[in-house]
Amino acid sequence: MKTVQRAFVFLLLVSVFTACSKSFMIDGKKAKQVAVTDLGEMYSTYNMSDAERREVSAQLNNKALLDEIIRYSKETTWPDGVNTLDDRLNSRTTMAKYNFYKVATFGNRTIVSIPKEKNGHMPASFVPTGPMYMIFASSVIEMK
Image (cartoon, rainbow, N blue to C red; front, side, top):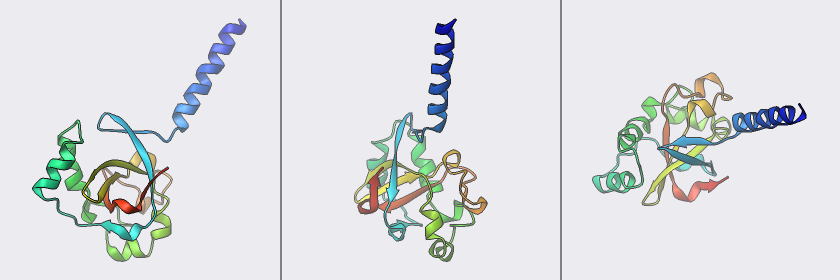
């Protein structure tokens, strides 16, 4: 009986740890959580060149993900709290609370994902309603 109880407690602990984990899967692999040290180094309307698209595509398992990144890395697709420069300038402290996950790099830029399921703690006007990506200068991205 004690063996069953121990096994149950072990499974419970593993379940709780997994549920509380900050891991996030993207492109079929565990994404690394990152910190953004300067939110002002964001590219809110960046248009990738063909060479940059090839560079990012070479890093992805799911080639359709590139199209998703290109579409959802524009401020017009972001939540109301961050979809204009004025909004972002007035809310940098709140934006710093996002959970960011590194997706890929190209040149001196890094693409991060801001997944809805990892950012439910944010105020309603900051929570993504679908996919959300941002592109930053790589120099402001630090591994957590």
